[in-house]
Length: 569
Ligand code: GAL
Image (tube, rainbow, N blue to C red; front, side, top):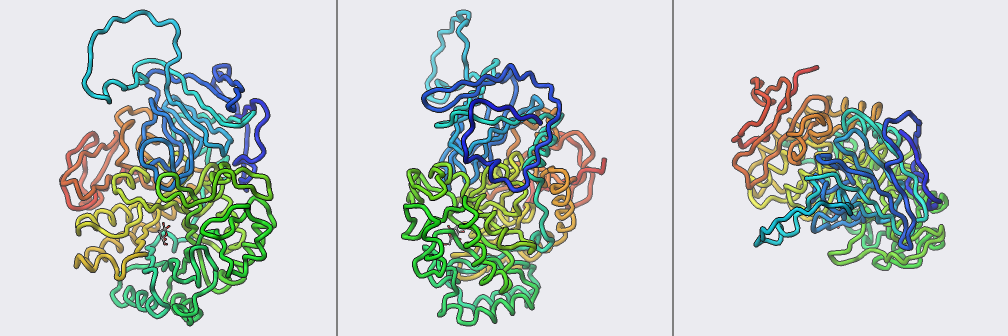
């Protein structure tokens, strides 16, 4: 890897906050003279060439797009992206290409990447009198037909640090980016089991009943999550137990622990006036509120300390193992509930930059609270250099196909994503979503608005039980994959193009992924009765039957989730 500095970089950039940054300069092949930099009155611009047939991937949790060549991506934190624009719960200014390199730009601004735009002033005339009748055909980009340019604009900045990584495969390149970020997170074994988040209105007694249901019926469940109802006030948060719903909170925690459950509590960081944290955090917050709550300035150590000390003393010491850090993203398309970009904080950070760093700083605050206590938690915003944080991203969106694309995409950017299951439109929909969750990094059933376990309405308890038992069987393999992630930076979930970068057949595959060293998973959505699966060159067997399967494209018709095992190399 190599760092190249252009101009004078800004103060609040992701490397400033990355706890375990690990920069080790190496020789690189890339001809750096091909990268140009200029300052404009809008910020700064970097340009580099993209070759004909060079493909571009990455940019964080992209739910709406995969193969980015020919597209424009503005990396802005947003909880409800509606199109393939770059808006994301977790945008990351890092991309990799099929030509053996990846580039990370150290910025938390809403940078725009123009991935393959033309800049040629010497075109030979090419007569073509064809006309077309669709807008798509009219505006189709020609990026895939010739050499083009990647132009990256960073607003406001007067300089930027660029990091270049090289490798034979995309997996090699991403592993180095993750090593630079401090390595992949290691997670406790229990975190790889089954998570169930209880109905938001549950009382302490009802939570214990729910837990008993799992044990009585031998349905696997390792982590019980409590949603906003545990707080005496939740929008904004009090971080105190509600005396009507949870008068017996100590008993509930004890009961869950005694029965081998780990406990995760929902919260967001906006602090209610009834909270003991309110007065403590008043001078350590921004000048705008969210839902009349304080917005803490987690940039400063003092703010993080006050917030984390409270959590340690009142919740972690009580027996809580993790948190679901909600609403630390932003919303521009639906309800626009978060703080404005013009908010001012004591640390001097801008609102737009804070939106892109909020989740990471929040995770860091909670890890400071947890200390040596292991966790595998959830967060709704993350960004650059986040691979060492044991947190998984999730969303209120719910398109199953987009969720699968999320699984496939996260591995490019040092992120983890759960395709969580809530309800199902039909039994098939529910089961197929659960199959995807079982073969993912975090098997999460988020029943926050379901009065009863969501499978009961479909009468498919036995199928659910069988699938969750399958999950239990995967734990040793997943644990090994996380240990490897921690050690080498190789992510536990990877798009096919990451390992098989030399195989162009994999370039467009955004609905299959590699899990751990040897599994290939090809989920089905409720709309599909059959699907095509691509198995790259190698020896494969069917996970369910153990039968040998030839590599190449297969037509698969099944009610089960297609999974294949690669022979050990
Ligand atoms: C949402 C979150 C959901 C659930 C809900 C509770 O913001 O994404 O998963 O926790 O809040 O109010």
